[in-house]
Length: 162
Ligand code: GDP
Ligand code: MG
Image: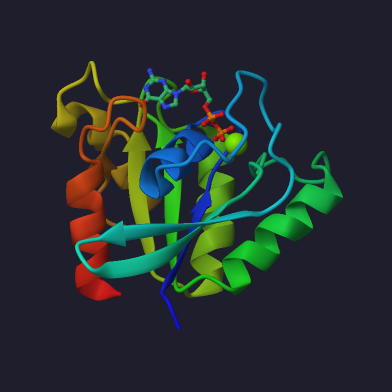
């Protein structure tokens, strides 16, 4: 069984962009419109000779009641089958109330979670991460999915614990 890594977070934080980079495909739908990828999307990534499965998901809105229930189910299903969760956040937006709600949902899963702060290419890594310590889910890892910065060290870190 290959280790399964689920990408979870609000719409538009860059999950599909990271999926494409990890799997070196363009299969996930990357668009400016929030929430366009509604279904789970699977891909295979490889680090050295170690393959892993990546699951892209539609975003969790973090709003009680106001969510697309079907998308919510898909995200929960993806989380259930994951060995590891990458919780993606937007460095430019900072830590939002919706992010705090999602953090609470993820914490209840009991699964290992990495806090990944995307869109940090124009920020110092420490500055990008600082806002997200308050999620209480460990040290934030700054990356830029669009530019590739930090992605290799993120995967190296993951493969040590998978
Ligand atoms: P998703 O809804 O979480 O899947 O987000 P997408 O992958 O569709 O990306 C949403 C938007 O953020 C797109 O316009 C991407 O080009 C942009 N984006 C993704 N990653 C980065 C990044 O590292 N830096 C910047 N500046 N923009 C990014
Ligand atoms: Mg997407």
